[in-house]
Length: 443
Image (cartoon, rainbow, N blue to C red; front, side):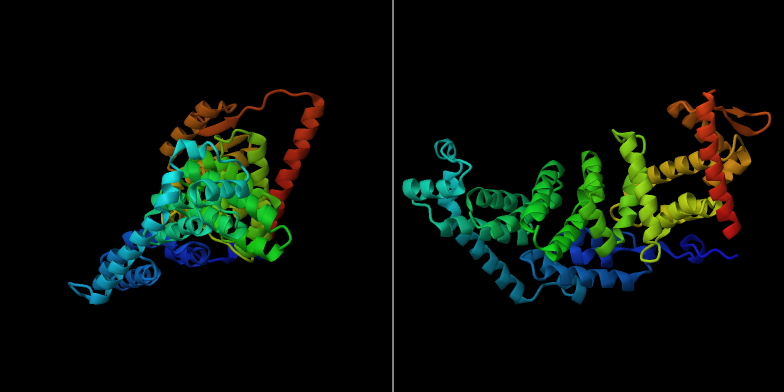
């Protein structure tokens, strides 16, 4: 019988065919899309001038609506082959400067007040009382507070993320407009991400999540849309800040968010799979990591006909089909895909090593003595490298195994156990071998 599994039916494709920028972009702010385009441009060869021009045009289209006037003017000149930009860019630049000066004046008083200890010490958690205090004692108006929000938006549009973040923070401290406060929190999250201030970004991300869970509790569609956006924004800290790994994995596997991923953005499975597999050995709770791995296998199986790439097909081949040859083949392709992905490039080596651990563990479940030659093929290594890799694995993980150099095999040593434990383990082993045989027959 021919296999109908995704791992077997899909042909190979170049890494470029697995580029997810077009999937990710609708859910990212335009300022966040820019580094993804820069990354893709940096990977082009000299003979790919047409693609380089396409990316240049995309950058211009992306940023022309921002107030990054000088940079947009340079992009336009590069795109049109001009030495000097048209006069309209100079005019627009001057207009932006005038706006910045106006907002600087409009917010000068409230900014100065919020820097004074005698004022800050009188502020309480009650925003209405704070506004009354500032109105009565310092003649602060609601327009002054709203000017902080508008000024923050303008600074963000100019690419001044740190200044924008501070303005939005001041606005949020004082404003009683819940909708604007929510927008300001999203804005601060964007600022902290683009400033690569990951600890602050995680704090803002938690505030956004709380807002989605509470303010939108009676609006399932809005929750779905906001969760989808938050999942995409969370990719930045997930793969750039080690301390974000476990809290963000907890977030992604939360029922509301995992349902959102499956229903609205199944391509996030690539990132979730890589995050879980590379979290082996560094997860604080091994039980949680094992459960997340089981969940990944289940979801990859469920979504196989909705989304797949070499990363998910590796999991499918190894953990569902028990096809070690196909798993090794998909791992080679997955490594290429990771090295072509903005978020995953820095994690490619870690993923390959963790994936080899998974292959080794799965293979050891059905063999007590393993040929080094056979195992090296499964791991995609030559005999010498495979031997070194296994020696390091045994040393680092205290795996109860040894290498029989004379026979050229790895011998798995299983410690003696009670009769009851032996029955349980043999039942488990028999079930696993039955799954492997069933999958082999199906192929």
